[in-house]
Image (cartoon, rainbow, N blue to C red; front, side, top):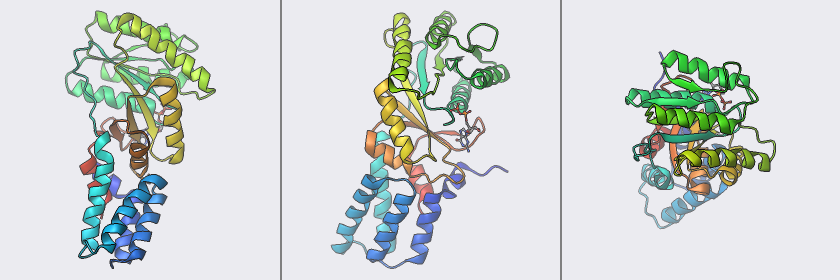
Length: 304
Ligand code: GDP
């Protein structure tokens, strides 16, 4: 039977590492703090966030504010939640925009297409009318994956022509999709884009053009530029966000692959570095493995 999302996070490098630290070193001393810091760093929490959290704990410990390791753990929980609270802003598609337009961006392989399927499923379950636009016209697999997914779930997928949809102008595919979504009173249009990081200016040109043509039909679109990030890629995830933020004006993040062997800590590094809303997390390959980001539940699943 599939494990719960909580169990999947508990199995992460972060949770297992931290659990082991408190078993190995149940005493309240500097060794405990050093081990916690090492654990945060090796779970991809990043230097800035790890150092800040541990420095806060150390000061309190030296002021004798903790009765025991359990009390320190409670403060660690509070500090980790405090890092995430500012970025826990759920995606609200009920803004009056019809359709609400989500432009998904991110490099190939991060789970972008899967996330689009999961998002569509989620909003279909909320009885929204959903349409997809196959704006990644460079990968046959991406267009095919969206089409197959749409057929299986009864969701319209706008792609170029009847063929492979390859080589078409992504901006014109997405423009057609928005036109059609407006005509059909669709609630939510989710557009895929190509994830080639060939050059920064190429990416900027392409995404810029998509945004310009969308604005011709709806000056407020896109309403969300959602970047999908692979949670197993550590510092790479940080540099990807930096690049896409410049090229596309990212307004929200989805962190995928936090199940299984993922380290899990990159969510904290992203929160500290960018302060961008983390809308969802991906915890598996099936259509129901997407959760709205909840910092309390997330941190509780990671802590012993
Ligand atoms: P894209 O190239 O960004 O569109 O990536 P895909 O959506 O094709 O996903 C790449 C691979 O990652 C596929 O094998 C997906 O099943 C897998 N994947 C996507 N999201 C998750 C996730 O949250 N957890 C796990 N374990 N795998 C995922």
